[in-house]
Image (cartoon, rainbow, N blue to C red; front, top):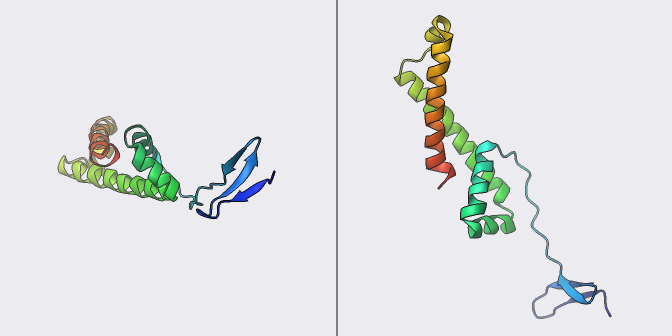
Length: 125
C-alpha cells in the first residue's frame, strides 16, 4: 500500500495511518499576538455560546487577531469610562493626597461598575 495518496478530484492529500488514509489538514499559521484578560474572557464566551463563530475564526487563522482586537477595544473602553466617571464624581489627585482610603474606595467602586459595562457591551455579546 502507498503511504501517501492524493485525491485527484478534490486535491486533498492523505497519509496512511494503520489501515486508514487520514487527510493532511493543517490550520493556517496565525500571527502570535498578546491576548489579555478581556480577550480570554471573550474566547471562553465564544467557545461556550457561539461554537460556530469560534470554529470559523480558529480554522480561518483569524482567532488570535480577533481576540487581540477585542482585548484592545475593551482595555481602551475600560480606561476611558473610568476616567470619565472619576471626573464626573470629582475623584481627583487632590482627594488622593487628602484621603487615600476614600479615593481607593471610590475608584474601586467605579472600576467594578465599569467592568460590568465592558462585559455587557463587548465581552459577552
